[in-house]
Length: 345
Image 1 (tube, helix red, strand yellow):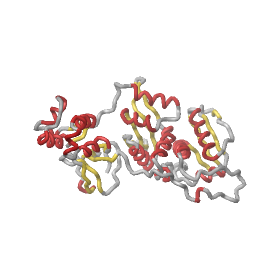
Image 2 (cartoon, helix red, strand yellow):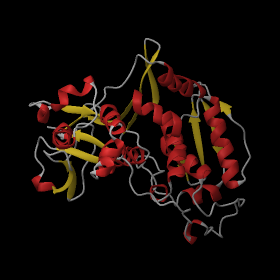
Image 3 (cartoon, helix red, strand yellow):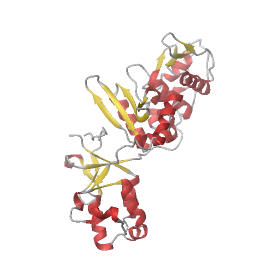
Image 4 (cartoon, helix red, strand yellow):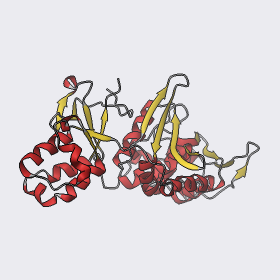
């Protein structure tokens, strides 16, 4: 089961918005084609540091290579480094390297290597291909990184150690991995963030990590190129800017345009069925409204939809009343805790 935005539903029970405007759990077999799927914006993410097992610390005693520091837990620097490696790194038995178009990104990779392992050898080189490369010649560091699944060519995905980590590390990993993405402008104005990948697993993992941060993305697969595309548009790009951002200066500057290009905005997705609930409340309790709400309280209101900003406006106007009839928290949950999407046909 997949939604129009590309969210894959894998659980046996799904949260849907019923015809009366309440979120309920339905078995996947009972979900209708016209059902409104309620996707929780923030999933469970452990808040503690993830201490790595002893296997990450075991060294090859037969190797004569120089020994370096080995991180014992996932922190922000290691998470960001892993993100860069998943995006564009090349990991081999005798070392690891990264080549990027922008010098500051390769410089960031060099700094993270030094922070994590105490390795500062070598220098950044400008290649004939006009990109900047930094190569780490260390069997010891390569052996350590080999413990993380998802870093090898043709098998790129988010390491499970990051998935089971905390939100801070999510942000740092995403900052690294999105250096493989682009910030697209239209007529000099911000349009969207885009990233492509071959791995369906990686697309699903990144989609879920963004969702945990409250960043909605659109995921699509184009069969002709056999690639997965992730798109982040204006309203959620603002959240991405605030929580994640880019290492490269030009991408960061282009992303910052999403906050100043006020005329360019993502469509406000409206929610069905909630007007029917509001009509029922209004019938018995006479909600405080203004003229802009008149369409929600007529005979056709059960067929109408409401945007989150409009619903929040109504909640603020009727805070005390809604608290007294115990729907205040529920309506605020609709606004803050869920994203609503339809099934892809």
